[in-house]
Image (cartoon, rainbow, N blue to C red):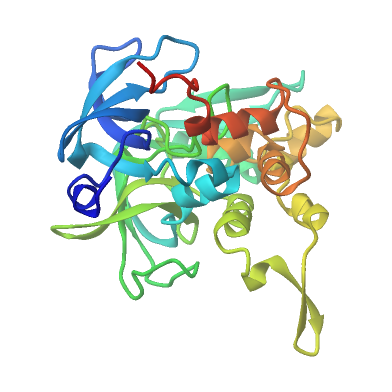
Amino acid sequence: MSDVYKSVFPYNVGDCIEFKRFVKMEYSEIYEYTVSKGIIINILNPDMYEVKLYMPETEQTEHWVNRSDIIKHYPKEIIPSLTPRLVLRGIWKDLIFREVKTVKYRDQSSVTYQYINNNGFLRTRSYDSIGEAFHDVDSKYHHNIQVHFNDYYGFTNVRTVANNDIYYNQEIFFSKKCYGELNLNGRHITGDFMYRRSFNSVPPSKKQYICGFVENGEKGLFYRKWFTCSKEFMILWTMVCEPDSYSLRRNLGGGRHEVKKLNELLLELDTSQYNIVHSSISIDDKKERYACHNLENSALYLPTIYQDMAMSLFGPDITPNYNNYSSRIKEGLLWMKFFPENILKG
């Protein structure tokens, strides 16, 4: 292919792409833009490409893609050298971490109190007002009372948290409608935001960390997608995106530092303290120690998820077994390597 042709056609047959597609949501009549994946099999013109969709466990179909809808590009030359960590770094490198400065609430929907019952199960009690909940619940358990809102918004502090934050000295706006969660578990792992958004009705607290993708709109910086963020996710993100960070080193004194070993970092990635319901401690201890946490679902409900990811990304290679996490994350992130070899033939 000539250099002139390459300059006109930035993508080539055999390249893999991720692109926006307007589709009907499963079990719903709602249509939304979602991210799809595929391999280019034909070029109509510089702005229109025929793509074979990557659809695991279903028949792969063709789809025409406009150049403006392409959001990620994997040239066929680099695909053999890609690793899960490199792909995940490409997905996460633009995540911006900030501390919440102010939150405004609108349209309160409910007040809930979560507690451990006498059988050791987590239960939720609802109230009409925060005053009623405070009056009914023992004061030492008031921290487990949460106020839910149909809408809320706020701004972050201007202080940067990670080295990739290019928006120094500027606040960032966030709102409930853009809240999301990362797809880090299940059969098909993407590492990116899930399609469903706006479902967390509990606002983040002042000084709590949030994380997401930032855009510059007509009224200033705003989070296009974001979530409340645990310190454990920040550690994993740093391991993937900023491995030379001093936060991953141990201070030996005298100005000397030593990079922490993987086993040491794995201990810091444990999120089991956020959900003690299934722990082996006594029911009385569960009642006493249980606490509500407004964090990402991965940290709340999957106590080893970040440890599993770290082992998959940085640990030794293991024999493929599609029932284990290492194999699932490899298949999910390296989807571009799983097209049939003859897909471009004929």
